[in-house]
Image (cartoon, rainbow, N blue to C red; front, side):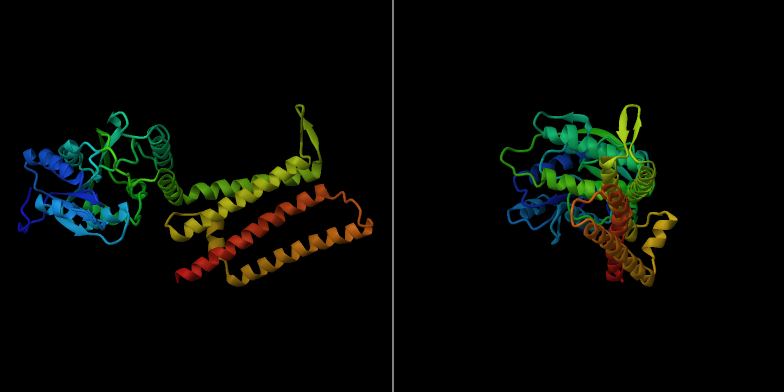
Length: 383
């Protein structure tokens, strides 16, 4: 382990995010030392302290580690603070809860160097997971589902998207513009690396059961949802195409249903009231997905369809008249229903088929108007 007065930057910095980890921190530090010392690697250990009120900082300093205070709370914030404090070519990090196999620190660094990788990951899923080390929900559902989503959407070949034991090239990390403060940092790091075309490598590692009585910082449903939301936020094209084609197809089917009326196809009766109601709901969902993509394109750098760019950059005057025309159309439809009702002596109406047909474009138009209004308000707020 390097001496603090050594002026030259180390080859490797090992970062431990820390929030009241006095029970396990010393063990983790020693195991990293035991892995790296025999290799002759010039390294340092940084403790990214996230506001510990126990003896974590004293333990770290007594073992020759550099303590970096990170006032912004969160797993991602602590890691970003520790990584930014490093001047090494490579930065490795792992949780300080004594659950990772810290003996794999040297093999992980050597794998990154051998393959000239921007990121090396110690995968738990292709290693050995001790009984009770990972909740079944995480092992068989959460991590596999999120990993599969990232692989499908961003063309990865990963086995463990939630591994918190990784080694990254700091110069590459600086270009990825990582911003997450929470547990979704793990997904963001992978997605940004994949989108940047970074070279990654995995080695088999594993997971140990944590000490009895320790309260984990991870919150299954909250943090799982954060991961999912971030994954989707980085793929606006998915929602753009899904929304666009859903609106297009449901509208065409609605027009067909209005023109043909109920028909029987292979013993199934379609294009009646229930079909039209379902098409209306699907069209509204499609409009919402499409508008969601517009919001994402507004903040990201992904390339959108031409029509999406035109809507995002729509002139405010044109937007005003679209809103006016939509409100006018709603008023006309309401007036038509009211007049027809009065002419029938305010008795039962039989306008369901017509009403569902005309409600379809109006509902989609209203969704688009409200969405575009919100989109342009966000644009103004960003300036």
